Length: 103
Image (tube, rainbow, N blue to C red; front, side, top):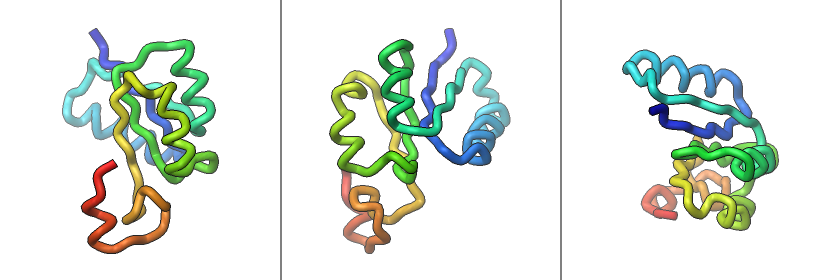
């Protein structure tokens, strides 16, 4: 049985990197489905079942507040937040306090 992963990432290179990394470690029973916007992800979740979602917080239509507002659609789904920012709540660079925050 495949593990179905919804990858919400607007950078095709990052999506490809994830595919290559999973193949390298032999994760052949992982099926990745990619969308580039949070709104598209919510629509996809209404139609299909996934085991987990990987969510980039730097999407054009995504802020931490919007993710919280969308939590109803994501309530039963484990979500891994991906960000290159220090402070994923505000999207602004933060210090050590921001890195200790658990959301």
